Image (tube, rainbow, N blue to C red; front, side, top):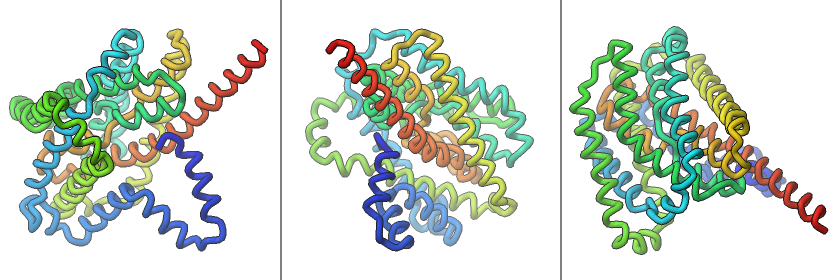
Length: 357
């Protein structure tokens, strides 16, 4: 993830002499999570009765338990020491949190009517949900580290965004959907968020001293749990959508439009954040942390949170499309950007060495 471009080059070199089909198969084996999402959508289209809420697998109940486990593990994984190390840089923190919870939602206020005019209502609300999501933790920190940025600042802001998002995201989506005439029970939403997301996270943080060493020994397995839960939620959500006929009028042009808009949104925000960070006088390390933490949106927390907020709403499958697309695009593009930042830092270091020689 830290250097996607370098990985692609290495992969291309390693695959020389192999057939195109074998290369494709090897790629999808390596990118098993992307393969899993595509498979979940395909299975939902072919056998929706298996994955639907109340179906054979009872995925609505299974995913509820899985969501609690995800946020419990997030709580265990948050390091108080790392957060304390980056707490003093208030200018960076204000920038990142404002980008996540003010600038992005403003984009919806500006472009929301355009989205509603150009696409189905469920997909438009999916973009609305994308705009109010918190940042990622793991990939924001990984990209910042790979780009030689302010890692303590990235850890603090990504962690803070994750915690704030549990509270702010439901309130923002409630407000925006209320403006569109969609009624949501705010009390029910707050109770669900508190019991299924916030409480497990707090319990995980309290049990961190006891469980951390045990979980670190099984890190490779733990890191896959959230991805498997996400795949089950995607299968469940798309099965409900297919069963209720949400996709009956769906066209491939809508899929292409989703890809186009998610790409344009990412490019707009990333390069706007770069420009503003430089105008604000940030040094290179802080700019890197600001760009990666302030522009990313979490799939790992976003999909489970959507399941809690919207429940078994048949529109959920289509609403998840923007964050599913955005997740893949942000990993690819931000990896290229991280590689560019790292090379610039290395070049500056070489120049500095020559000047002092």
